[in-house]
Length: 227
Image (cartoon, rainbow, N blue to C red; front, side):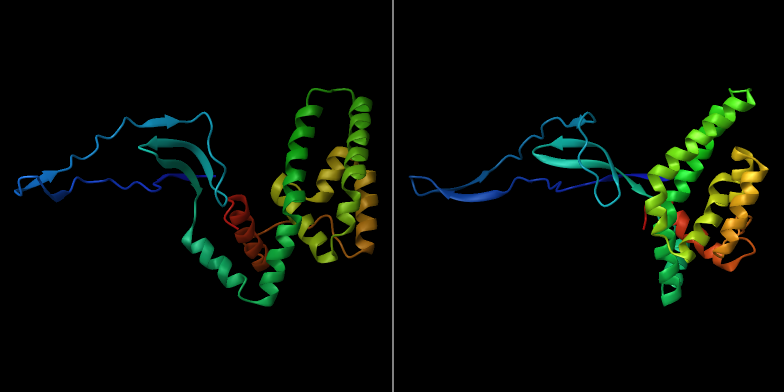
């Protein structure tokens, strides 16, 4: 994602010299001018950046005369996109949708990352039996790690996750299972999912589906770290 690099100035106030009236012992008054303090050379430190500030990434700092200037990468804010998000969340239904997307967002990103990982791994293993063994092992590891968490998802959140898997992998959940575990396993999972109101063949289509369009707005802002 594009980011805008900004330098955030913190407490940089220059002290100018000022005139001051003082009395000398002979009673005569003179004007004494206090010279401005010569600035010390600035020191730029990228070795120990400060802690992030509200989603920003602190790249470094500049120390000058006891003052600190942070060099910060701030998330890009698309005004039109943010306005669209505010319109969505202006209704109870929209707020519920945003909360559901935020809930399943980590699992959708995990699915995309895992798919890339498995594609890369399987590309170097021509033996079919070895491929199946590895995918069974991967399935067990994912099941053991995430089953309890996924059990807590509502049906609505599960439906959103199915669509987001298509967004993150470029394939429907059904196609992902079919590619990794075969047609029979995909057919079995699809039949089981239908009992609970899911369709693993659901595609993500923000151009033609109004709700997917709203989800895309929320996902884009989540990916940019704005919300």
